[in-house]
Image: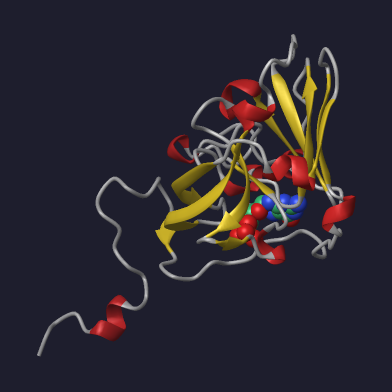
Length: 201
Ligand SMILES: Nc1nc2c(c(=O)[nH]1)N[C@H]1C(S)=C(S)[C@@H](COP(=O)(O)O)O[C@H]1N2
Ligand SMILES: [Mo]
């Protein structure tokens, strides 16, 4: 009889060494839903995406225009500050870099805003090439509403509260402005590898 039974190890898989940031565990096939309010449902013909704030001119895309932008597949591990991580998730969408193409700005930060009123702030340097996307597809299917569909921000190298669901735009700002969870004491940047969970971490 084996000393460590299957029941004892439970459903917690052991991720390969170095794959999980400190204090995180692997949820395996589960995909928890964490929303601070009800799931908004906005018809696609009313949906648009806006890049505004401290910019030379406001950019806006309708759903159809957004869908015609250059797209990228993204495979990434995601890390929620409540300690769960999900490994190897696959998405598709438009790089934030593409949405900021040719934007002239002095801004150092962005505030993502959403249907339902959620906001989160990010340094502009954290939404560069290969770092941040507005995704509308999860696992080859339209992004489910509870996970942020029709479209959400995906910034996998930061804690998942930065990956704003139901995102409708980015406001570029000269000075950092705390978003929803940041106002409640979460870290302004939120790097899981440095365990930047709360202000002061
Ligand atoms: N608009 C919006 N985006 C949000 C949230 C939210 O409450 N509203 N929760 C954040 C938090 S705390 C987490 S952990 C992730 C959860 O994403 P999921 O529900 O797809 O797992 O979404 C983030 N984005
Ligand atoms: Mo979270």
